[in-house]
Length: 477
Image 1 (cartoon, helix red, strand yellow):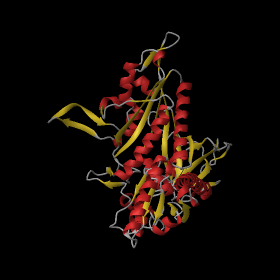
Image 2 (cartoon, helix red, strand yellow):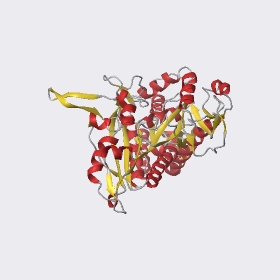
Image 3 (cartoon, one colour):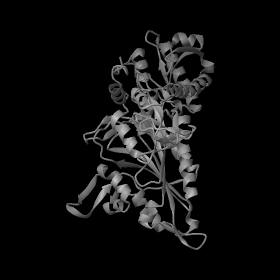
Image 4 (cartoon, helix red, strand yellow):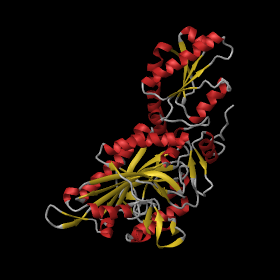
């Protein structure tokens, strides 16, 4: 039998680590805090990249690449930025057998070094908007790590844009947040709350930060993507200017936005179960596994089953699906069922001599794990229908879970009592000191002020001071 996972009820964290390793998504590295992304995990990242890359390019963004090593002096040019990242920096002080004249920081994010290039490339308003993205790795020294969710080195994309006006920059900031929302909900089947972060939770050096926040099965929040209006902070630090339409010199207005391999962790925590990984079909690498069942069949029957299995696989591939025929005779059907449930294959097709004689096959959706008898003539169309429905059902299930664990709270006692229960919509006076005290006493952090949440004045649940509206508090990854 395939390896069993720790049940979620017995230990959610243990279940997660079990799943990541036994589904062969990632493994620990000998470098503390770093992970090895295995082919099963990297296939998911490739599909995430493929879809998001097109979505970015559809908005006019082009890809580029910038250096991994950043002069330390660059980070010091923007005071809030370096202060925000200083505890997480990894610094190279020696290279080629000698001490460097200036230490080089391994990229934690690229606003500084990218601005050095932008300041050379941009001369006039005719050079704007400048819209670039890079797919890269970054390093942020982490004390407590968890595969995919928080590692010292991880893969991501970071978009950086320059604009003539603050309004143009704000429009782009919100446009890219909407790209993230669309991807999360339409492809990952992960419902999210788009909204604005508090001042203390915003990106170091930004004017405003927006995020999409998702709820995991343990009712904790996961920040699944961020988009920042950087204002002119980095432009002024690096003298990124342009001659405007009025003939005067102006600093550009900038944005940056990013998402990472953390999305794979979010996918696992949103959809998976005690049998293993569950993957939304739109980003799955393998949609269908065909398992020929011919243990006691005659040689002729075995040949017929194998031929039909491969013919069906070819038809499914023509329909655009990723298909595997698992014809490994060293493993029994039961082992294969468990194995493909563990690694998250979306749809299982069982085909044996008796099925062939009836002109049918058995189909099993990974999320439902229920058998359905289907005519072979209708198998391709049925597979597509089942996968489409699976995509919709996964989203609805996750949304129903989130909605049933979202509460309005109106007192500090209620906030503390419900701290483990999900998303708590509470009035807050906007004071970072109040926010910090709530975090210290309850473990709850502000996630975002959702755009969808109607804002009405009230009283802060902790201080009783006036509040402009409710914000989401939650425990988070």
